[in-house]
Image (tube, rainbow, N blue to C red; front, side, top):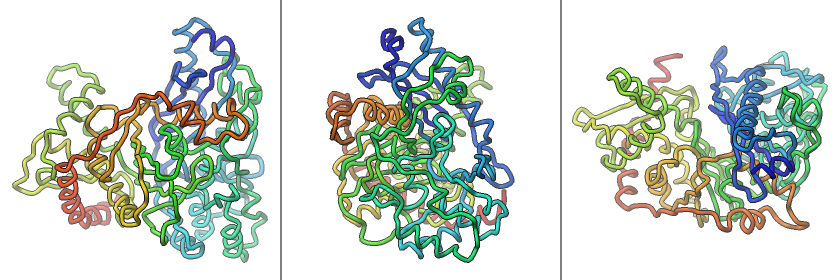
Length: 529
């Protein structure tokens, strides 16, 4: 490790997740050398889920400082030079800037469900599913709402694109992250020209001093260089002044694209499920879907292949809240316990529960879920039959079901479309406990699920791999071949097939879940935040 650090041949990947900013350093063999992290949380400000600019800057510096300290502790030399940097972040949302790159509104994250009117109108105009969380839906809703900042917009990007701009001065995006701003044309590796024209026609009477294409980031493909670390960027990342500028940056990518890279899910027929604060599946399509489905987004891989995406806003937040409650109870009883140990024990306990949930149903909805027809708000809730068996095993079983129940509803559409799925990889913290979430996901989607030894590394490792591809690829070498042959060829992995009892139980649970959706809707309408 010391020689890699001293030679400046390590590559840095940074990802802004919903609850953690993580920095991962990899060597030439792609194995993580060191990591650093910073915990953070979004805040609800005037009804909008957001992160402040100060929180983003300070979080970036804190994650890097933690990485830098861990490198120094491990090998005794400071981190001064890098072979490349990649930045990734949660996709979508709304970040409009004026001509001086001043943010015109607080960052509106993917978690907000306030753009229903715009999304519906754009879906009809494009004949393409436009989700509420996509950047263009937010922009059009701001136009419909006559928000006063709109005429001043000169640039619109994602969180990854913004941080990348801080480090490099370049206004660019990977095609994967760009496909969450608005639809892209996979053949052109650029925004869909027809839809850009349609949008221009929609707003032609507004008299704005900008055109859509002029305010969007330039689109780059995987493997292209997206600028270099500037002196200002180096000083921002490492205020201590040790980090040298000049290393190349790869195109900034969204968390969906880094999840695909981290699980080698970039070829048609492959897919992955990323499970964190949100949960989503990405299936690389071998043919177009037969029609527009509001439950399925069509985005791209980092190399521009079309992907069917089922995105759900809530996954682990409710589990985290319950684990916090159990920890508080344990400490009240005089026991000192580690949070990680609580997760492991409770997850394993879930596998002892009734496969159908034992008469319990859980909604983990911290936000709206358009996939199940609930776009407004969200109310986490537990419902049970009077004769339900309220055991710890059943309780934890339905908490895990809740983390993927909405995803399962969307994946059933993929099954009816006969979308080819050769293999699905699971990644994210939900899969760290062996034999639990992986097994239940296999039951949910009726397909084998593979988890690699890097399942917990997540998107920071994925963006580091995309940066390594930019730095080291050979002429003409595709991303698919690079990952297959150089990164994952000898990677340890474990595959589980769905257990028929779990499949039948999860299907039965989903019937109870669907029957209780009106209760969730009533809770949202009757109990205003």
